[in-house]
Image (cartoon, rainbow, N blue to C red; front, side, top):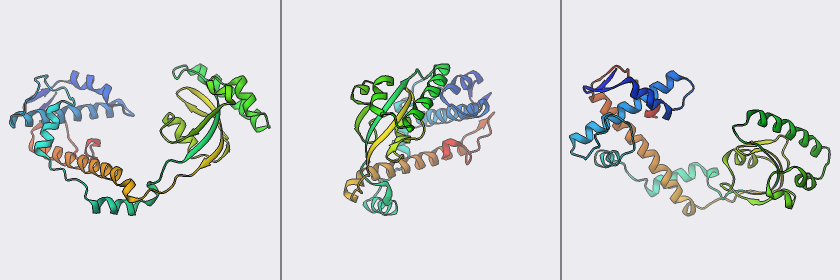
Length: 255
């Protein structure tokens, strides 16, 4: 049984909370769930002390409005200055450029994400078709015959793509590839793709003025997370917590 300043957090609450904290082990998920509930209760207690309206839904962790009101009242979060933004821009020149453009065609072997047997079969079929393409087969004709995507009617062409237009698992692999036939099938939530990159146009550097808004958003969020983490440490240090050894420095919530 965990108690936070004499308020109990029952074990069944921790077990129920675990579903929201995926981890490599059940033990790690339980620790994350316990920490989340403890911090939620600390927020709730502090808000009540300050007279901020709080729901009476026991110790359930949530993103209720009172948390934002509490942080706004208690945590000083400075905005990134023009100098901060410019320093970050100058220290990270490669991060600020327009999205590269790709001209791509593909063959999709569609299979549901949850169909493990179908996935294995589709992977074998994709490997076999890739060998055919490496042997010089016409990509467009093979796309028309084999692809599950409507793009098969145009030889598998997806046209010109920029980042953010496709699903992340497809984009991560395709945008780092060189022009030509990709040497391995690309797996996505939709199935397996055989991909041919016809053309790759590199991104162009952005000016500071073009990048400033995104830099400010990033730096402000970074400062906000750090300030809130420090505030949580103060709440923990001032609280009487029993039934849980709160290792503040090692907690993922403190990062």
